[in-house]
Length: 295
Image 1 (cartoon, helix red, strand yellow):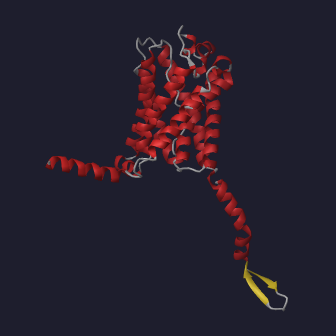
Image 2 (cartoon, rainbow, N blue to C red):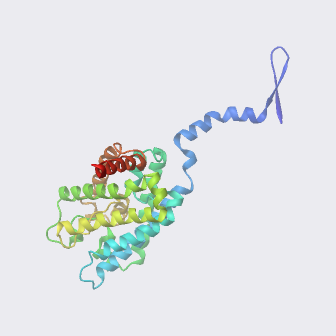
């Protein structure tokens, strides 16, 4: 279908309607592409739902372990974290990247893997998912259990179970160090395209889940404080219970945001010194090994 435009000299100039509409909409398309509007669809919904079910499943499992007759739950909690996170990663990585935490979203944005627009929407979706997940948990769990465990919220005093709570400074150091350990072990592999292709998605998800479980285990054992639940490594998971329960869950809440985000910045600075792909490093190491063998 053509549209006819009359010029001043009376000459008729046929212009394709499709071309006309494309030109008129070019600015709109460029603007929407600039803000990343084309990305605001199913990935964000996947993050919201995945975060909601993840925090619900994880918190329920951990509370069950703590309320059981297990003498030493320090090994069972990291194991539960590994299994649950691995399953959720296997499900959500193909859909949205499997972040379920502002930490992974922030470092992905710093590395340029996602746009800032998508990162902002991801974080909002994760926080909303956390509120939804803990709201469901609050209404289905026994009230006494909810009160005893502060709805599985993040605290630095072990839900009041220890007479020697951690100071905010110590908790901040733990959040920073353990987040960096998680990024160093897990994210380094996950962000390496060549390594991901070699290992496969299942192995990469296992490495990421094991790295987070290890960081939690270290934080639980290193303090020696009875009742301390370890680092969070997920600020959104801390926000949900704080909004629903309030009160003491806001004490030191900033620690669970500031520590991980400073760790992300520190890791980003380190990662910029790494080769873009592992092949360059492997070639250099192979050369060094051969040279030493010939010496």
